[in-house]
Length: 330
Image (cartoon, rainbow, N blue to C red; front, side):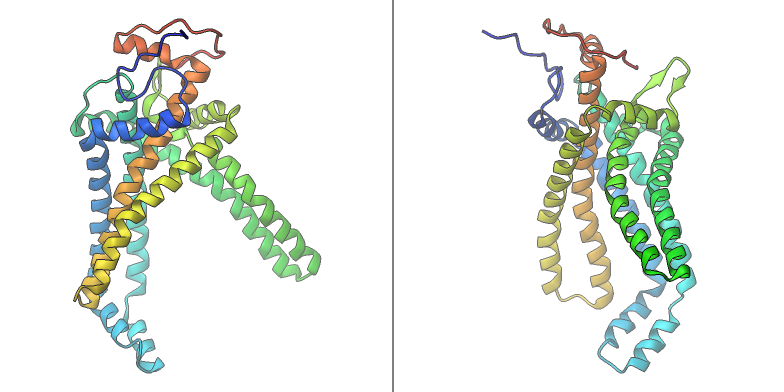
């Protein structure tokens, strides 16, 4: 007889989670809350796909002509290409990209809220998940923008180094630029993993003064991953592989069907966009839920979050040997 098993009032046992617990918990959350997980992902991906189609709608006829003239003379292809409203497409693409970014940030927050409620077995509908997340929308977007700027700043510096190397036009300058580019790759990965838990932290944590802000979220992610960088990296990489594989299981057969269907060029473009969105609607909740469960695991291991979760669920934890080291947040 070993120690008694940890209680499991919801989708995960209230103890430090292994990799198997995180993967099992991901699919358990989807089974328990299909509307709040798959439904939310379908809504976001559907809106993004519609926005992309609306952006291309005014130029679908020109694109159709461009495809039809692809085997024609180069002058005909250039004439059709020049007729496209490139300024409209550039500005529209920027607007759609910003809206898509905000929607996917919001989806990540919704999935984090679902994981937080699922840990204690609390019922949560589609509407409740969104109502809990929307008040933190600004903080979530702000935190995500900070993460993007932090990582992008590395490559802005690298770009400037290459510009200087091109101006100097010396072999040593190009060698330094190439070396710095190689070094920037692991630095980018390291920073990306270190701040990966920012979204669940901002979506779930509060202090006496209210929900935490973007900067606090960045610091919380750095604190939680500091002693477990490799483990966090491995689990998130595994989650990305699983999400990508599942999305391909959906997208590839749909793409094969579209390739043999008697559709015109215009309909093929629209159908391809929605097929890609279908795969994304499967991948997004898998990745988001794994990320949120990694966050919960790190707080259980470092801040005894399992004690707070057990109290919220109204269950008792078995006595566990060893004390953990940091005070918890709400």
